[in-house]
Image (cartoon, rainbow, N blue to C red; front, side, top):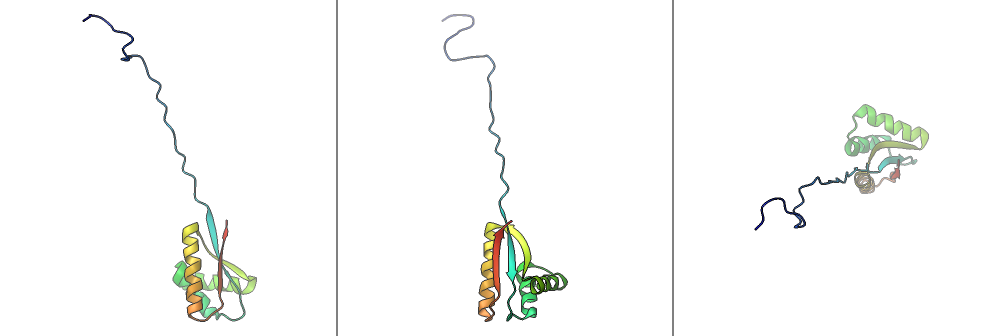
Amino acid sequence: MTNGPQRGNGDDTGSELVTKTRTVAKRPNLYRVLLLNDDYTPMEFVVHVVERFFQKNREEATRIMLHVHHHGVGECGVFTYEVAETKVTQVMDFARKHQHPLQCVMEKK
């Protein structure tokens, strides 16, 4: 046994350099959910769809429906991919169930 400082045994008492990896969260891509105009789906049905699946009040749903009617397409909302995909599927299934040709699509924002 020796008295005094020991060297070379792996017990370094000097300073250490500690590095941290910073993870930067990337924002998810967003998608616009759009309704397309057709000449057969009743306006009231479109208003109902917008209220039910996009949680819009009657006034906002009517505004969106009129935009679709006059411009051929209208945005119902902007969502992450999974949410947008689900909404498109829900709207399309609901329209088919009620025998309307309403089209709902999504596009990357």
